[in-house]
Length: 289
Image (cartoon, rainbow, N blue to C red; front, side, top):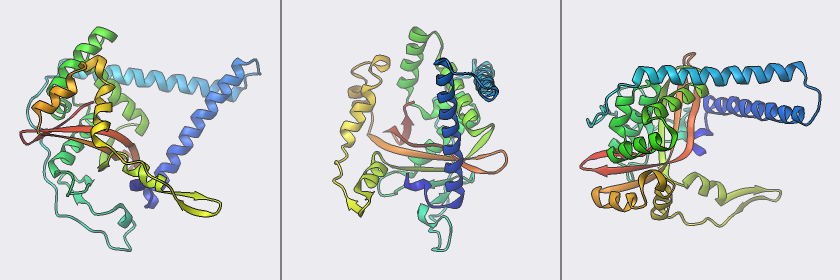
């Protein structure tokens, strides 16, 4: 994830996240050992209790969010994306220089994208999409998501799982808050072609002899999009993608990275190196998820 490598701020954030991940894996290994008949230590009991408390707190947070949005309205209005300032190229001595050129939006969020590939309004809509999770605003969320996806996914969740899309949204909000350690704000948004980072990683793999070029499999955006919607066949129907192509102007396949600031002002990775699809229709941009 090249977007995350170059500054001390982001490197520190990644180290913190890695440490948290390792701690979780360690706790899982301890639980497995205990199940196998080994003596349970006081530390293990304390760890298990802490994990149970965290899980319960997240469930309670999700329920609180759901209660606050269960009557929220779906909106067909265009999201208020705001505007972005002039393109900024950091100086060579700037610690953010290797992150690349960026624009600062009027809400203070920095956006990184290739202007030859993506319209500015697309990345601004992605910004608003993640701001809706930070604000726990279901109505703002619906402004960024394709209408037929909202309808079909809501019906599918109610039929198969017994809860609606609002409940799913509340769970996602609570999950992101749990990951960030509390309330947070979005600080940076980056998009790039799906698979670009993975291809760059594969192109140069470090070995004992040095850096050796590796063959890179050609990325096929059309196949990527087909596979993406193929994963939603049960919820959206087998003909959803074909119909979507007919009623939209263009479909974009991307990977995204979202950085956030916590309440203490530190900056961390919220979500990174995940695929996302956007559709363009009549000058508006919509996502699916």
